Length: 361
Image (cartoon, rainbow, N blue to C red; front, side):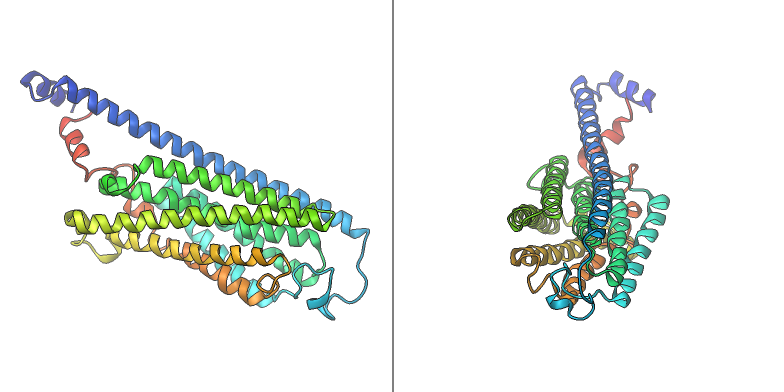
């Protein structure tokens, strides 16, 4: 291919300006990919750090609670038990079902990750295990409903884990646009969409973690209230960010369908489950599931930790766990690595068709 470039240069078909554009585009793409990879790596490290902090908080809270045992039978009247943070006794049956399903999804996605790669989906895999761990602590809450430490671990792992699912969706849109060569249909360049939304996800994650930590360590009602408001601010910011992302994605699909029908139908000769539009539908379903969960969490926390939504187990599973389960399980049969890989990125774009004609420098 290098000799082909020399031949093109000698024949006048390969101008120096085209060579410069070729080099610039390659470096620009590499820099964007490098920045995105660094952000995702930092986010994954941040998840592990926060997880360690939560576990340490649990140990400290458990030790502190051991010296202040609450009076009375915790199962007698959990709804009015001031020592029971959930105000109900968790169902082991529902916990077992939810835990088994989420863990099964995480394991199956681990297999998909090793078979079809897509490193930018690693955050979803890690988030799945963290979410499953958070659900597993509800077994402990069934037998120790007054344990503040178990409640803190359960709440923070369950509420913060979806940030990893959101990060995976953010990166997928940019990857899909580049794979199709349809960056021009995004209102913001694909590389900046990924960077901007990942940064917003990390920021809202930190705000929620700070609010949760403040509430967990609160020794007064006022401090607990301030922590819950900080947590709520993080949830609202996350919801606004994801609503904006979903709107950008819907607009992207509309523009591709209307303005580039050849890209829209590029995989119509393949089986439907190998068509890029199947992956596009999966991302849309995932967005809907995350939006339902995010709206629920904002309303729930706006009522306070002792509000009706927070103290009713059916709402937790129906409006939080189930939408998130749907949001991630849809990726298992349609793992993005099956549709997008480093060898196929940008092959549809005119710029890359030109690059393939020029050959590597």
